[in-house]
Length: 251
Image (cartoon, rainbow, N blue to C red):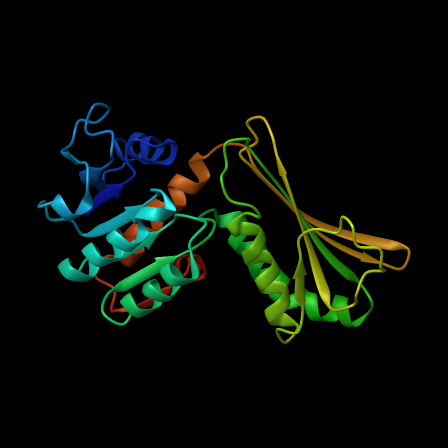
């Protein structure tokens, strides 16, 4: 059984994970961390992770980006593996995660769903053939009106899969307004839509001469991300220090 310390336990994803774990014999919440305290939980909750004195096997972080540095410090200090699910990380946080992976097991994914990670694998296999054949790559992502970062971390990971397959020679274009010029062959367009209660939609569009290929993923519930995070926590328990992704989890 994996005992989880859940950072951001009172947020949407934190509550989703808590509900799922209640019915999972192989996982449990040892403690939570949230600035709102323990009003919504039946396990010990700390307002700051540095004050958490309860032993856990893995930390799952679905908190805010500004708190990531403190979560990393806590995990390194206490030698606890970290499943980092927060998006909108700074370059400094990303570097800090990489450094931490030399001492603890770190799993970072911009999207915890099985479907999105399968798409990333597919993109790594087909993108070079399509772009070398004259196709243009565009990504359109849609999320709820409360999402703070844009473009989404998932959209960027999809772009990275395409770019990596093409030798990392592509640039990312986020806004075409005010620019009167034709599209470059060496770019990926990324567009963000925010509105309503959209959980998460991503379309990868390969537009060629007289034909279009679209690879789409629709998230209808946050449960898919919560299930992925729990699965990742089970995978990461007792792993050696290193940097892991959901690709390692799904095999």
